[in-house]
Image (cartoon, rainbow, N blue to C red; front, side, top):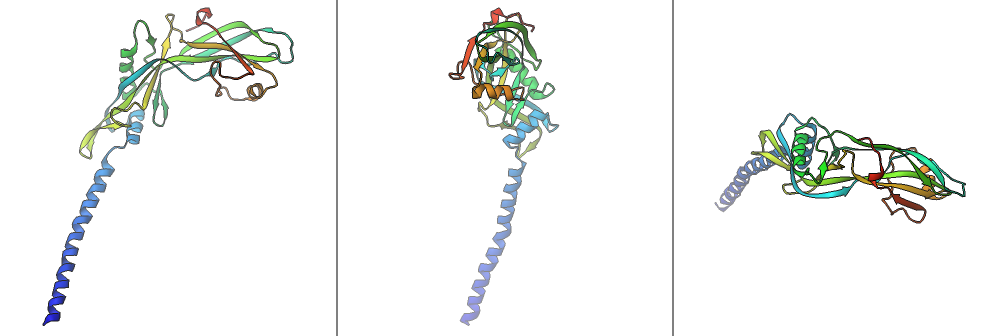
Length: 263
């Protein structure tokens, strides 16, 4: 009599376990579905930069800004050779530098004009353009171009360097989707209140030409720095900033007021 009762008791435990298993499985599946439906920060970035059809709108929300931010150090003229000479030489340089508005997202740089994001960036730019600091709000390229005769030092190579002045506005993206995902339509990248997205607005002079730092760089011949420049096939190289080149490099800043530029 006792044995059948024990079997019956074990049977009830099994039935309870089996009854709970489908409920747990459904809960896990629902959680996974909800998680998969939410837009990730990377998806928001991709959708905003490509102007995805899934979007109702994409906005850049500014959080903070910095005036007179200097851009990359760029070589903006050909390299002129005065190697082997014991005296200085006057050389004519053709200089050309261009600037444009840059939107720096998580996965690189975007400067497209035909997206909702670009429209939002333009509107934000209006806020930061003043009578004292004029900036380029759209993605039109602005050029600094001129010819100038300058002195190349003895046994040196010479060329012009440029670093544009920019207003760096940082913030985050707010994307509104047409269809709700995981119960909501608004998502952020990388997060609400973040300053990880940067929009660089080039600053302009009163005549409309780009503002920035311009300098003539002389590099001693026979040095690793000179060899790297003479053998380089790349139009743009990573170059040290003004006064940061070391003992073999001499930098002389050229005031932009001396330049007859073509905006």
